[in-house]
Length: 203
Image (cartoon, rainbow, N blue to C red; front, top):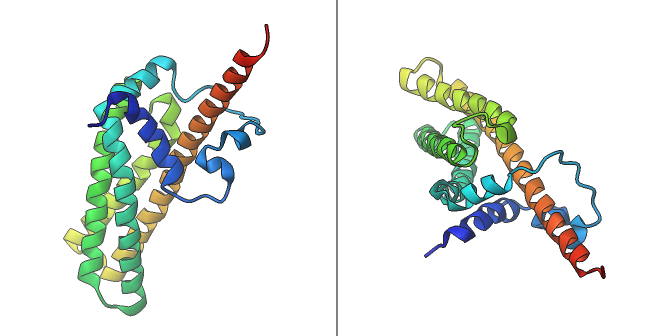
């Protein structure tokens, strides 16, 4: 059973461990972070918001859906590129984009519920305002693909190109969230380390 106090930590860790990054600070290495100057004007969460995040059931849901969606994206991207390169496998590639879009809808809906729990707004809360703006573009492009697919408004090859445009926007948006959450995690670790150092100094 997962305790609510550990859900927030899981949410922090999933962004720091799922996608490889060559910089040491990516993994939350405090020794590296201590030598960096963090230029974040405000913490991502207030203490009250962090507590709400830790007890929200949607925090765990987001932590599960985000890596699953990324895996579906990788498979679908390969299938789309394979179709564009060879002309074979249209049905499988199309189905994979539909599945990816359904994952996107799920994470957008539950993400809005998470944002409401933590920040009191379903969308465009201050800490994630620009991430949400780009998310709207990602949602629009994925939805445009579904419309094109089911109405046959454009040829199949153009549908796949539209899917790639949607995927490019998704990658940008995912990078926004990952970098924001990593920065917040490193800032928190840096602050904790500094507090411990100060606590250990003689008065």
